[in-house]
Length: 245
Image 1 (cartoon, rainbow, N blue to C red):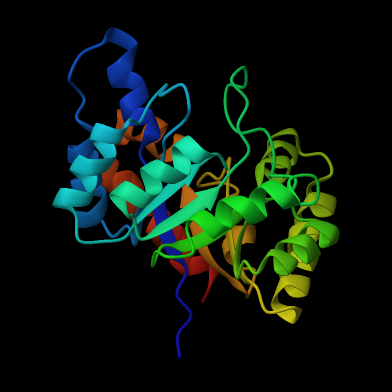
Image 2: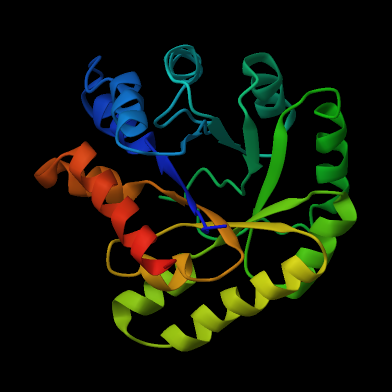
């Protein structure tokens, strides 16, 4: 069977642009529709505690108009779990969140937050929502995630992306992801990846045999200012397809 790597298009930064002036444009739901039409396998959105971009209204609107899955990124707390339980996206990815950060700076420390995550997961146990956790490519974090009973992880590729842009320690950072993916498969985990991925650096990640999904947002939205959202997604899809041949 031909390998397929799913592409999740994160449209948070369409809302960032809208919120910069407090207008009702650009419309997040239109971005979701274009992404679906352009070959995205899923739409990813992050409802942050400070609602700096996507909000609950956006989430509900997106769920009402698209026919592909919605992946909701949230912090592991009661407020966000209640939102997930109410809106029922196809999947939820638990991510770390700090108010002062510009963007997510790393993976969730599953070891440190094990007990809280265990309680949080119990709250979602009566739903059909698929659960993943955004972690750094680290063996101990994978073992802890497995102990929680989570079957899917998303590797934070930010350190690799930073290394790639500086052309320093690229092989080291890439090998961490390759080795972690191999270990994850060994213990029965499904692997996704994302953060900082672009046309230039995505090939090495997409070509890792057991990564089945990539979530890409900031670059796609930024590039679409000059080349259009549909064209950008189509080109990203093509680069990923070439990487897995």
